[in-house]
Image (cartoon, rainbow, N blue to C red):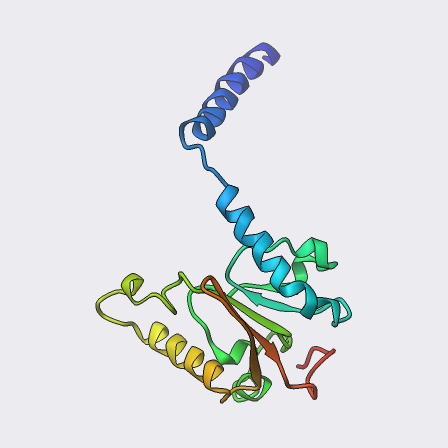
Length: 168
């Protein structure tokens, strides 16, 4: 029985390894962008005392800033001010507490910025995301744009009344 497990296990592991050989990925460009972003953020993060929270849609070497995975939030699918502005969040009942996001970091090659990547018919979620992004850029939400490069845009939270605690 043990011999059969070793044989089938070996076949399975070999097939699993072939997937990675068949589809090799060069992660150099991703690491390069992450390092570039980390250099841009370093002066802003050094002024902050960890832990602070990020809403981010791009890879970042966050461990070098003393952050843990629990401090990183992703905008899965679309931007919604409800996830980072307390006044918007408090309009509806929620089962999870509000967590203030100290920084919002967005990559400019996403559908939010690159019109060529948008579908021909804009969904309600994408329209809401574009409106939220417009509100961030015009200052209608309590965030200030601190970095704006060809690859990234970074907003910093200006709302100090809801900082440092989770709200229910």
